[in-house]
Image 1 (cartoon, rainbow, N blue to C red):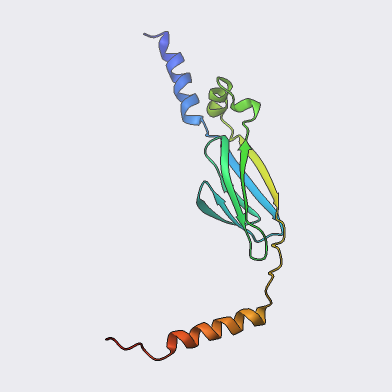
Image 2 (image 1 turned 60 degrees about the vertical axis):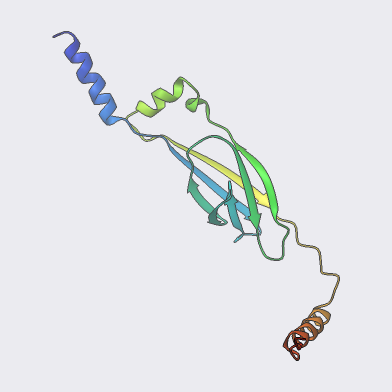
Length: 139
């Protein structure tokens, strides 16, 4: 029992000093200020830095007015020090390891509308007058 006490104390100190791995993801786009959705959840506007929990595939949507919505799958790969069983050692290190990943997307401009704006306004005015017109009488 006396011999195992130092081993226990060393193990306890390692566990108490252990730090979790910090995972950061930076997403940028051209043009910037585009709205980003990851796995169906809105996370903010580009450029944005966010935490992530797992490595693998993510469904990503990038939206900005005047540009085509980009729907894609992006893979975030683990660095070598996050592979099993090395990841356990990284989790037990007394310093705070950080994994910083980056994704960049380029949006294409939306195609120009075939109908001029004035034609759409005229059609909307006609529809409004039809809706606000006299109420049909019931028989």
